[in-house]
Length: 124
Image 1 (cartoon, helix red, strand yellow):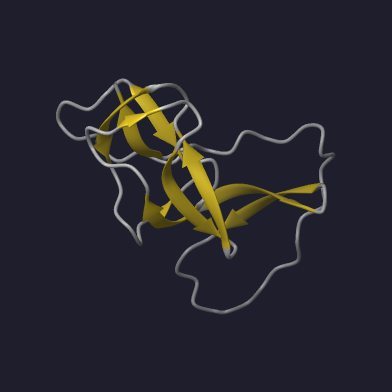
Image 2 (cartoon, rainbow, N blue to C red):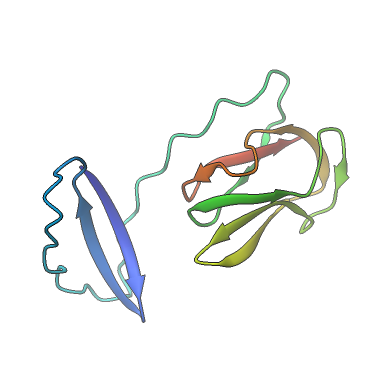
């Protein structure tokens, strides 16, 4: 089972998803919690960075699918430059460099499914 926190129109829901039931049954949603106190969502296990990877992590802000890789290993980037584009709910979301640096590794490929908080690339 996996636990997720989902926000819909300002209402925060705690959802538990069970895999492999095969019944197709859908249960009623849980009662909403106040939006001011969201529970911490579990962090996804990050892919193992490449050898020689940098110490600055570029992490996904939302779960989705890698749509495009904007930077390449060895490229110099400035704070705010797009490194990877993630598609979530038919929106393209740029994942940007948290600070100036040089791309040390790209840890995903186009089409990969990623969770929020997953390390997509590293900078040095």
